[in-house]
Image (cartoon, one colour):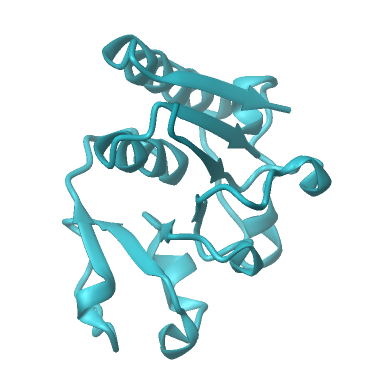
Length: 157
C-alpha cells in the first residue's frame, strides 16, 4: 500500500500523525508538516496568507476568483463538484496520484454534528443549515469511498 495523510481543519491529536508519510493539508493550516500540497477552496483562507511564503503546491478549484499566484507553476486547478470540501479534494488528489491508503485527520463532521475547526480563529464562519452541510459532506465521503474500493480510508478521530 502506498500511504499518505490528509490533514483536515477539525481538531484532533496532532501527536497521532505519522509525520514520515506524505500529506496534504487544508486551507494553509498545519504547514509545519511539510505537506506535498495544501487544498484550499475558500477564498477567505487564501486571502489571509502571504503566498510568497508558501513552499508547497496549492490545490484550488477551477472557478476560484482571479488570484495572482507568485509561483503559478505550483498551483493545481482541480475540477470540483458542488458540495465538496477541501479535505475531500485533497483525498481525491491523493487517489489520482496512486495512493492506496489514506489516513484522514481532522474530519470532525464524519464523527459528530460539528464543524468547529482551526480555521475559525482566522475568520468567523456563517453556517446556515449545519445538519444539511454535514449530511452533504458525509454523502460525498460515501461516494468517494464507494468509487475507490482499491483504497483504504482510515478516518482518525
